[in-house]
Image (cartoon, rainbow, N blue to C red; front, top):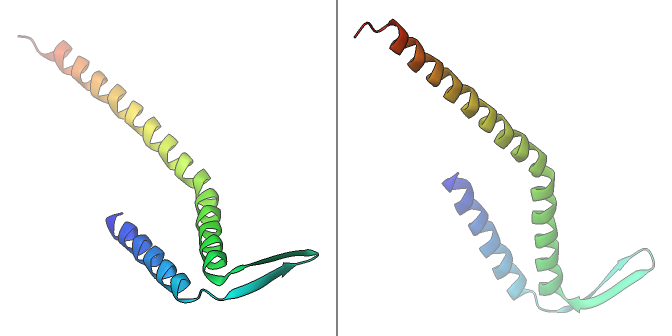
Length: 93
Protein backbone atom coordinates (compact mmCIF):
# COMPACT_ATOMS: atom_id res chain seq x y z
CA UNK A 1 0.00 0.00 0.00
CA UNK A 2 2.85 2.37 0.77
CA UNK A 3 4.43 1.62 -2.61
CA UNK A 4 1.18 2.57 -4.33
CA UNK A 5 1.15 5.84 -2.39
CA UNK A 6 4.69 6.69 -3.50
CA UNK A 7 3.86 5.85 -7.12
CA UNK A 8 0.77 8.09 -6.95
CA UNK A 9 2.75 10.96 -5.42
CA UNK A 10 5.44 10.53 -8.07
CA UNK A 11 2.85 10.61 -10.86
CA UNK A 12 1.28 13.74 -9.36
CA UNK A 13 4.66 15.48 -9.12
CA UNK A 14 5.46 14.55 -12.72
CA UNK A 15 2.08 15.86 -13.86
CA UNK A 16 2.63 19.18 -12.07
CA UNK A 17 6.15 19.55 -13.48
CA UNK A 18 4.93 18.69 -16.98
CA UNK A 19 2.05 21.15 -16.69
CA UNK A 20 4.32 23.90 -15.34
CA UNK A 21 6.60 23.55 -18.35
CA UNK A 22 3.68 23.79 -20.82
CA UNK A 23 2.09 27.16 -20.10
CA UNK A 24 1.10 28.23 -23.62
CA UNK A 25 -2.48 29.27 -24.38
CA UNK A 26 -4.60 26.57 -26.04
CA UNK A 27 -8.21 26.10 -27.12
CA UNK A 28 -10.16 23.01 -26.15
CA UNK A 29 -13.23 22.19 -28.24
CA UNK A 30 -15.86 19.55 -27.57
CA UNK A 31 -18.98 19.60 -29.77
CA UNK A 32 -20.18 23.21 -29.58
CA UNK A 33 -18.37 23.95 -26.31
CA UNK A 34 -15.07 25.88 -26.48
CA UNK A 35 -12.60 26.83 -23.76
CA UNK A 36 -9.44 28.93 -24.00
CA UNK A 37 -6.91 28.52 -21.22
CA UNK A 38 -3.35 27.70 -20.36
CA UNK A 39 -2.15 24.23 -21.23
CA UNK A 40 -0.93 23.81 -17.64
CA UNK A 41 -4.41 24.36 -16.24
CA UNK A 42 -6.01 22.03 -18.78
CA UNK A 43 -3.44 19.31 -18.07
CA UNK A 44 -3.93 19.57 -14.31
CA UNK A 45 -7.72 19.48 -14.67
CA UNK A 46 -7.46 16.43 -16.95
CA UNK A 47 -5.17 14.72 -14.43
CA UNK A 48 -7.56 15.51 -11.57
CA UNK A 49 -10.55 14.25 -13.55
CA UNK A 50 -8.70 11.03 -14.33
CA UNK A 51 -7.86 10.56 -10.67
CA UNK A 52 -11.46 11.26 -9.62
CA UNK A 53 -12.83 8.87 -12.23
CA UNK A 54 -10.51 6.04 -11.17
CA UNK A 55 -11.35 6.65 -7.51
CA UNK A 56 -15.10 6.59 -8.15
CA UNK A 57 -14.81 3.44 -10.25
CA UNK A 58 -12.83 1.66 -7.53
CA UNK A 59 -15.15 2.82 -4.72
CA UNK A 60 -17.62 -0.10 -4.98
CA UNK A 61 -14.79 -2.64 -4.72
CA UNK A 62 -13.33 -0.82 -1.70
CA UNK A 63 -16.74 -0.72 -0.01
CA UNK A 64 -17.32 -4.42 -0.68
CA UNK A 65 -13.89 -5.29 0.71
CA UNK A 66 -14.56 -3.22 3.84
CA UNK A 67 -17.95 -4.89 4.30
CA UNK A 68 -16.39 -8.36 3.86
CA UNK A 69 -13.64 -7.61 6.39
CA UNK A 70 -16.21 -6.33 8.89
CA UNK A 71 -18.32 -9.49 8.45
CA UNK A 72 -15.26 -11.73 8.88
CA UNK A 73 -14.25 -9.88 12.05
CA UNK A 74 -17.72 -10.42 13.50
CA UNK A 75 -17.58 -14.13 12.67
CA UNK A 76 -14.11 -14.38 14.23
CA UNK A 77 -15.28 -12.66 17.42
CA UNK A 78 -18.27 -15.01 17.63
CA UNK A 79 -16.08 -18.08 17.13
CA UNK A 80 -13.57 -16.83 19.73
CA UNK A 81 -16.38 -16.30 22.23
CA UNK A 82 -17.75 -19.75 21.41
CA UNK A 83 -14.32 -21.33 21.90
CA UNK A 84 -13.82 -19.47 25.18
CA UNK A 85 -17.20 -20.68 26.46
CA UNK A 86 -16.46 -24.24 25.36
CA UNK A 87 -13.13 -24.31 27.21
CA UNK A 88 -14.73 -22.91 30.40
CA UNK A 89 -17.48 -25.54 30.32
CA UNK A 90 -15.10 -28.48 29.81
CA UNK A 91 -12.54 -27.17 32.33
CA UNK A 92 -13.27 -28.97 35.65
CA UNK A 93 -11.35 -26.49 37.81
